[in-house]
Image (cartoon, rainbow, N blue to C red; front, side):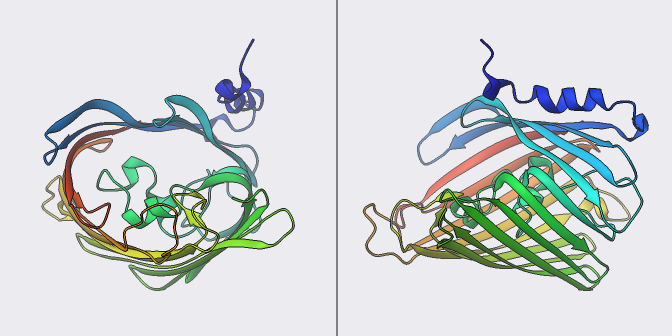
Length: 335
């Protein structure tokens, strides 16, 4: 007997084949994978090579308004292949076929219906390994949003000086979660964003929320990213089971220097990131460190347009006292 949960990736391919008569030149098949190897100097352990992320993306434009997107991804925690995204994108104001992207810079208004990465903060822009310059995500992302992906509907408007997203997706408490994200683009090269999410149970009683603010700035070979998140009732991308009133917050700041953007191009990039995380709940049934710090330093090499090698050093105190470090080598390949 076929297990549908294990074969969900068949459906976007089948759907694409049925409608293959529409604008075949607008069909795209892309993807990526990365391989990592960890070494923990403080423990003297090498974890060996493993596949970290693997994803195949299929997108297709049907008419001037409709396009379809899907992603089949490897879940390295469960060791299986799953359907991570499948959705329809409808353009409201423009008449150009657009392939669904994690970020869309062209001015337009649209509706997304299906399963997608929830567009709030900076997480959804760097969840895929090719979209970030180092191996790990920021500490505060791991502790809160954690690669938020779910089924629902998204309304978005992108204009010259601002971008707005509103999403309604499945909630963490068997209800619905409303998420809004507003980005200001008043100054070239600088984006300032604010976002909020509220999670309601089946009786429409708010059970948890997240507030956030972030900054992205680019100038020449430099890129600066910083984000602050304060959350209540959300922990590691799931409903918080530790306590009904569990407040926590944190921030990070990241500097990327990509020398490949120079006139005399060098295919090397450097990254520095500092993250802090605070837990304010003193009545938790399990131990929670009051403050966690994580330092990350990385160096990378663009092998070519589609692949790169990265080396990351990470040092943190996950329990608030003793520090642990980790050295990770990663190869990322896009296709």
